[in-house]
Length: 278
Ligand code: C2E
Ligand code: MG
Ligand code: MG
Ligand code: MG
Image (cartoon, rainbow, N blue to C red; front, side, top):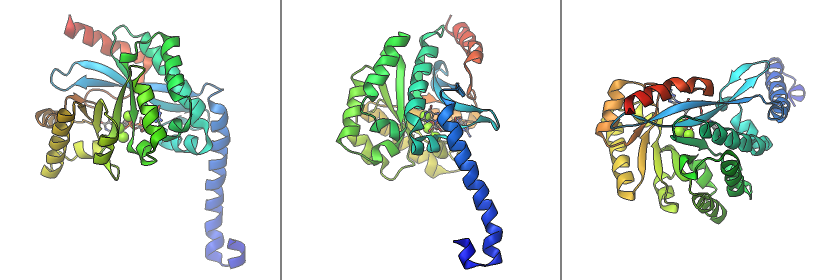
């Protein structure tokens, strides 16, 4: 097409487009093989009780240990995995690995696992989760599944049925990144979530913005009224921690408490936790 337009400006733009397209195709091909080649790893970020600051669990966050590009964050491949269907196998691997890791922990804290919209299109999602729980021998009450508003965007009977099917296994369900979607409030009506995770964008502005403080406070109150716990995401500073606690968030997560880390490094946090609760 650029050739037909025949302009130098177009031609000079073309190589960049080609390179990006080629890189995407290459990444796509590599992604298709990456599950079988065992290139994914789960990192775990600690979750803490806001009042006592005690460890309550970990969120599993996937990374791709890419042979050419190094450790890639999910922002660089999850969407591609969704578009290409790779997420089905990847999602199942994540679920099994997270449950197995959690079952081996020295303390029975929670494990939170993210589910993407494409995983909800699978018929057998509750069965897959049940199988991961059974194989790992993890108590269902220790597993929490996080969904974003995008799962409910394609809101239909099947999605809600699947959520109930998951809940019936005894796992809990959290609404992730709350407040960033088009219709956050109405989603709270569609399913009785156990937890609301307030998006980092509200938390990060709390110190300078009274509007953000008011929003976090209102969401925490709403959660409390609806019987849902509320986690403040992305707590990076002591001031933010004090503010989210003061405004009613029941749990906290963020760099102030710990970055996502490999499973092999969790023992340090478990030892601290054991010392605190002894
Ligand atoms: P999320 O579920 O909302 O996860 C929290 C993200 O915020 C993580 O980014 C985490 O590293 C980051 N974060 C946590 N605390 C702080 C903080 O104090 N400051 C800042 N700046 N960032 C913080 P990550 O690991 O890059 O994951 C990004 C997103 O990718 C996740 O957002 C989730 O939507 C998706 N994702 C991650 N792992 C999985 C997975 O296993 N399956 C699926 N389907 N999606 C995943
Ligand atoms: Mg999450
Ligand atoms: Mg989140
Ligand atoms: Mg997020």
